[in-house]
Amino acid sequence: MGPGHRSLALRRGGMTMPEPIHVLNAIGGTWAESHSGLRMDDVGPKDGTVVATLPRSNAEDVDAAVEAAEAAQPAWGARSIADRADMLDRIADVMEANADALAELEALDTGKPWEVARHVD
Image (cartoon, rainbow, N blue to C red):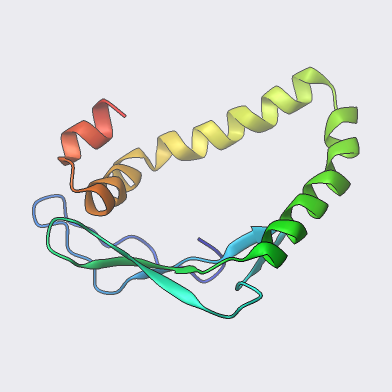
């Protein structure tokens, strides 16, 4: 989502959001708008609520992301398997700690019931 993103103030019952989440591209360790400067809305199917606004990324953004990934790969590949596994475990821990909020966002974004988003997906 990016720095400065608002905390999730969602209620499972009504799943209301005070404002859409402003998502940024993550490229090369930085958060950025798209090169085009254009954005698009992510609209929830349940009631047409704008869940998030997203960068309308283009070929320049893809090229920048691929270039950053290629530049980062040697350092990542040089890490031990155990170190890479530890890093991925830390990511999983953060996701698990925020599973309810992530499920609420998934429910808003897709229209599926919260229980399915939380316990099936």
